[in-house]
Image (cartoon, rainbow, N blue to C red; front, top):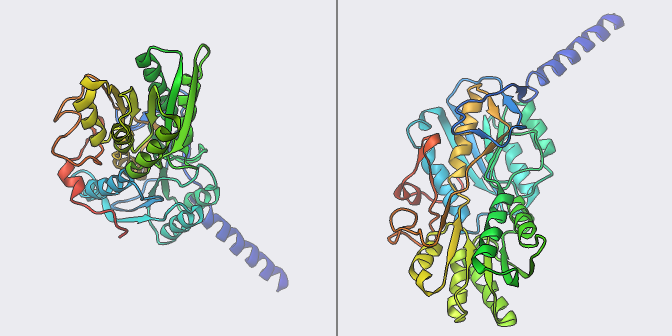
Length: 375
């Protein structure tokens, strides 16, 4: 009798383990992937994933972290607007948004809660580039697709969507050096939100290029948190202390950073900034005065591509592990009203939201009609 009970116990244990391991995350498969014009592999070395197909429509959650700047607010609004667009709406049964702040534990807790509620996919901007291993394993056990974008993770275990942040920093530095016509001078670097992979990678790309052999620039760093108000204050303080700069690189909060130069009556200098509408308006208006700019955009519309990627993966289609999105750019003297900046829209509107290869074409009115609240 004891022997029979032991066998039964082992069988039950085996059945439990088997049921727990039905889903072990995506399989690594051969490419090419689905819709390669939209979901472009990061490089020739990028591997491809395939999840078990699920019947739709799907329950999808956006787990944002920090929401204290205009980019994040527009990103959340974009996600809500995209969830109602034809072509995606019919694939979504439920769409939830939560912003958890800058605490990693809070973000991980929210993701775990959505997995336990039976959500099919979680889109996220990671608070930190590591510390997500347990959540990834839990998602894999439950066949949940996790898609970090913008601030991504230092892992190849999940599908991710991003622009090349190091390249964005490198492009900004290369443009500044060429525009200044110098190999030395003082450059102000306005960094983003500390602890995030985007801030780290743009900084590393910028420094590598500006400190290339033959260059002898002095770089002053301040932290602007990708926020206009904060950037305006720290740039004003830097000008008060250092008096003069030969160029400026701003990760975000570009409108505020340039306003600080104008308010301080600083000479107009080359500025490499983000794609805020206000920044591009100032560049267009004051280019004749010496404010020559390049504007490289990390689009809030990345969230739409990430949502589309999650739905495509849930449909069982082959996907790149790392999806590359081109870096949109506009530079002096090519700022054109109604084309790459919008005089009638607010300064804090980010101008790059269309991705034709992905069928993402969101109107500003659709985006701005939404709110950034948790739901």
